[in-house]
Length: 185
Image 1 (cartoon, one colour):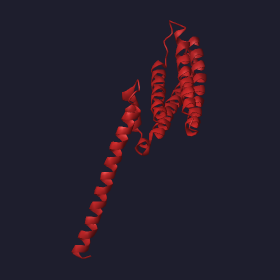
Image 2 (image 1 turned 180 degrees about the horizontal axis):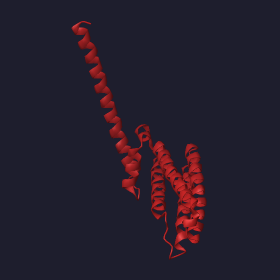
Image 3 (image 1 turned 180 degrees about the vertical axis):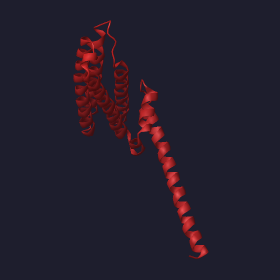
């Protein structure tokens, strides 16, 4: 290959890389601005921004896509919590009977919450953002009912309190982003 041909190929390659980098930087900046706008009214703003930015799917998302992503993140967290509860229930001989009953109730609540988040995805895809709100609020209510089951026994400490809290925060973020979507339409 002649020297000028090599230079031309290298030069084209370098320009192409520079264009891709510029496009990615522009997309990255646009994504950062979109996420900040989506999370602007979230009660748990830092968690909202960090959880969306951490997921690669946010890079190519519009506002509706961010609502969908936030629902999926909350559902994944709910599924993880459900699995954790089942793991705790495997060795019932080590559990206090009251804690065991509370965990069984929580297991049912989380199964219901996950179904409700799946219903909220269907509502979002159908363009029914008010239904998204209803389903996500129902999922939050299930997590609260789980926690309340432990609170009715004042001497019993919830063994999944932190997980309940994170789930509720993620769901709260869904509501905040969905509200921004509603206001934009």
